[in-house]
Image 1: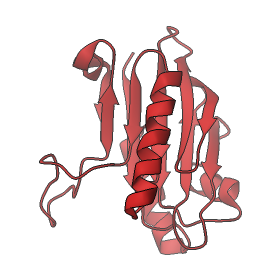
Image 2: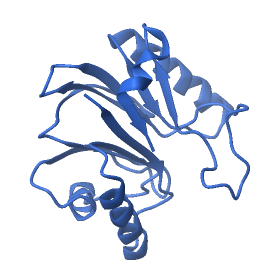
Image 3: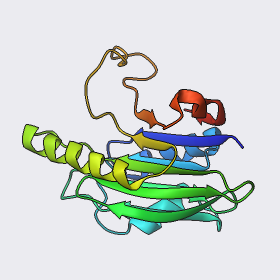
Image 4: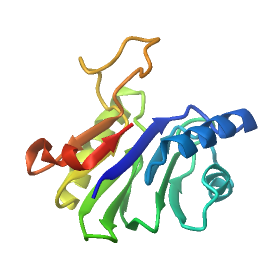
Length: 179
């Protein structure tokens, strides 16, 4: 079983051009679990999800934006994964995914990391609590700290937005395609 995950800070989905770009990329990349951060959408999120991934097998959950900041949209292919909500915090949404093919289980947390020091500390506390709830491999989308893993601006990717924490080390990377 190969896990195909896409996590992307889209910096807003409130105009048709942004939605069309994201939809085109999603069709090209063919991930079966997708997490979009900073959607900046605070109403009609399910409608936006079906515009981006118009499939009867798409399932989704979301955190609405707070005014013009934040927002997380998590989507998955229900032909491949059974998704069960584990927790929704102030900065994150966490799901346990079980493969329908072979019962492989893993946990995903989509995060919209805050900008103030106080909120960042609260976010880290939230992430620590979530890690305590998850069993097996745990993947989180969004960078929570600055590190040497960042690319320079102008490169194809500006920052690494996918972290993997597994009780078995990095072996899980053999099963995942990271976009």
